[in-house]
Image 1 (cartoon, one colour):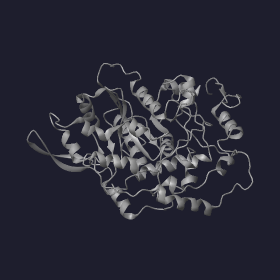
Image 2 (cartoon, one colour; image 1 turned 180 degrees about the horizontal axis):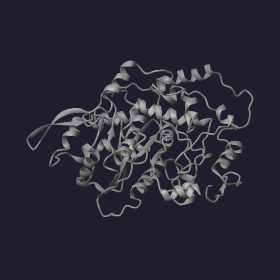
Image 3 (cartoon, helix red, strand yellow; image 1 turned 60 degrees about the vertical axis):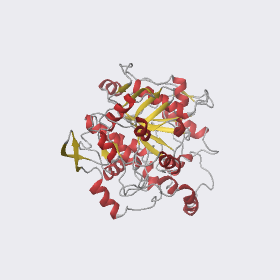
Image 4 (cartoon, one colour; image 1 turned 45 degrees about the horizontal axis):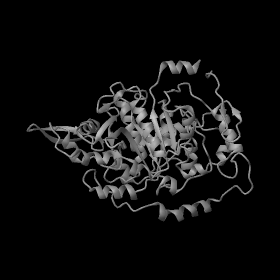
Length: 469
């Protein structure tokens, strides 16, 4: 049985409930986000497919920008090119994590809170990042300490699910199978090691590298951050995490959700964490990830995704936080999702709360607070905002007081210039020039009103035993 019940009060009418499901059902029925509740039968509710398709076709021209920078390589473009890329390229693989907590799992982990109860209740009620959530509001747990989430079996939730279009799933939303050349490319080049010649101390040698799954980036960032005079202090995640980037012929933003999942699993595999064996002790391919997500839907984790996407196996349909969460939960890998929006009481913007949440994550229980660069052994964070997803691998506080996220962006290639830095005894490179591609500050984050982050949780035998008693 679960532990003692906790009271959850409706913020609108004050009614007392005792579970996440009860408060969710109450809010959906009596305080719906729109004018009507999806649980109340309405006349003329059905929308014809033709009208939905009309909306999709009308939005194509405005939602999709030309891929003018598809061959841009990390560090080989100018700052103007990178800035232009950030401002104009929109990845439409956003998704929100459905955290309906009807079936609480036996292995829920409860980490320490970063905020007091009142603040957290306001901050971590994420709004929808996909337009599909406008008709089906999913109430996240106030404490957001959930490692698994299963979709509700009631027919009412199925009625409001609909097939999504290009505005949610990308330009290939309706394809049944990706083209043969792309399948061949992914099978032959994605995650495949190559032999290259490297010279160290005047000696040439052959080494094996994986061009789009680079190791050793975080230790290099640690070195550059320690040398950067503008850095007051910084945190980094486990140094084993790989920077997974797109292939050169791959669409600029087509598989970003998959690439971020691969970065998360690089930690699991390298540290032999929970889920390593079921992953086969290897970073899963895009095709593997699709199979895992479909399997998770079969098990009931965020299974509305199948209705909305009509399946993703073998396609280029965009995925996001909801699918990432479903996959990890389906594999028995504990995780939690947090949605971050502007605080209505303090008026603190979402990006400030995001930066605080990330710093709290890395600084929690870290002993050596005197070090300039504080290397932790924590997992990275899956990071989603409207239009794009990345992987947070660190946090930086600068001497001028500004705060930055350190991210691995799957859109950028790891160029040969990066690889050449690894073996040098002294790195003669401007740290700000190299670090610029990994820093995301307020000037970037303030463009977005809401964020989602997914964090892996370390299983605890004590917490598991507590939940099962």
